[in-house]
Length: 191
Image 1 (tube, helix red, strand yellow):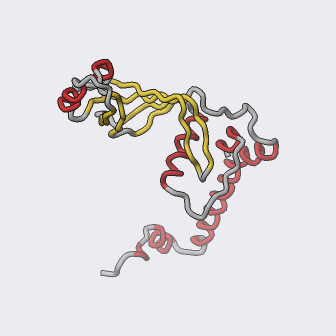
Image 2 (cartoon, rainbow, N blue to C red; image 1 turned 120 degrees about the vertical axis):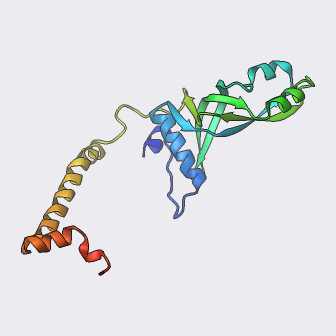
Image 3 (cartoon, rainbow, N blue to C red; image 1 turned 60 degrees about the horizontal axis):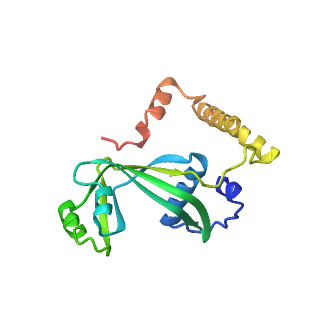
């Protein structure tokens, strides 16, 4: 609902949602609600031109935070494209995998495109989406807002009914029978 409200898109829920859709839903939701959030990162592959300037920008073999930036980010959710705009990814404790090999290839200084694998030793990155869609201060109709406010009350009422039902099943039992039932002894194998 949050993504639909912020983007004015309507999503049709299929019988099966792919892992990629679930991942993109999670990222887009966090981009809209949080703007900046931590995310698990292991290894990222980036394509860069081989030259000494780019080499200086890359993380080397000593870990340090490394910033990647992309101006035109979009995510696909259930066949709908959601534009998130500018994305910044701060990779925590980044190192370049096979650093000496990358260093050697960068020495060509001929700007050929090469792939570089960057590893986060902390396993974490911080995503920031400054241009992600925004949800209004009052995104829900008054009726939906009332229903959302009722959630805790309904949860409590349901829990109370379960407690009453459990208590009623024990009401006419002796203390020993209650102990046997509540200790799960009925579900264990006899010796």
